[in-house]
Amino acid sequence: MVSSSADSRSSAAGQADHYSRGMLLLLATVAGVSVANIYYNQPLLDSLRASYPAEAAWVGAVPASTQLGYAAGMLFLAPLGDRFDRRRIILLQTAGLMLALVIAAIAPTLAVLACTSLAIGILSTIAQQAVPFAAELAPPAERGHAVGTVMSGLLLGILLARTAAGFVAQYFGWRAVFSASVAALLALAAVVVLRLPKSQPTSTLPYGKLLASMWHLAVELPGLRQASFTGAALFAAFSAFWSVLTLLLAGPPFHLGPQAAGLFGIVGAAGAMAAPLAGRSADKRGPRAVVSLSIVLVAISFVVFALSATSLVGLVIGVIVLDIGVQAAQISNQSRIYALKPEARSRVNTVFMVCYFIGGATGSAVGALAWRHFGWTGVTAAGFAFALLALLRHLPDQGRRPKGLPG
Image (cartoon, rainbow, N blue to C red; front, top):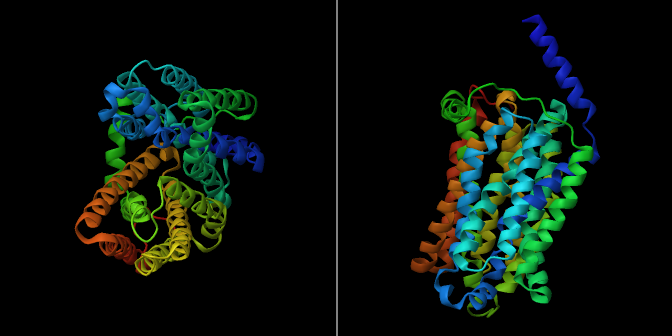
């Protein structure tokens, strides 16, 4: 036992030697460049219809396959970070992702592109190795800041992917988007080989038991369940808004095209830029306090949205408040859960992120239904209700700290 403890301290000290701002920026870049691949195809749908006229009715299968693949990758690949060296996993997934992107760039039919998009989604979960890697390298007192920095890269990748893809496609064609991503990943892989340290596996479980252990972690750790529910509810509110924003902007009095919704994504970059600040606040004041403030910000944003059905300025202000609230809550929740079981960070992160995306899918569906039956008022009411659900689940945590949930 003494020897094992000494080995653990030695390993932690070795990892701390690699912790630096440059290393965090590298991991942030890994996260952003990889996750962007699941959003590149969204602005390309009209171009895909033109390229595959006989299959135009099925063009929606391309982004759907990518999202489905990402969910599958989170569930079946992300937990491997506890079992194997994360650096090796990142490099192997990068190689596979480049191959899938090459096939996408030359896809002769929409069916081939859709199948390849499934693989692109699965392999783009490289980002889900980068965030726990940052938590592993960082000392406990700076874990929130480290997670926030890497998450800012991931969020910028999400927000700017559509803009970049639209620009490249306009001047060079949609196939060039996938080719450009291959070049970016190749350059990134070279830097990873040179700079990124090896991680220390923390589990020897066989693959099947590794997956099964995630259920046991969810049962064992009430703090994980609490953070997962809160995060899912807030992401549901976020998704309810973004799923219908284009419809609002297309109608009176705006009469704006889909490009306008893309520009709102750039406005939302404020949330990404605030991510490291949220991480630092979680380190200093405790993540629970930051989550409480985040829930309030999300609720306020939907009040602003309700009053801004005809105001672009109001919508811009609401987007900034919403994005800051949702991203600050996610970073703080992840900072909390990574402290629950350091030896199972990848699996804990998988449980959280799977719940998070289930919340997002629920929010998108509810937002669409609310828009159809009750218009913009219904959408804002739904978003506020999701924030209220998050608050009700979070409030018991304020009076007493549940087992398995650090402050």
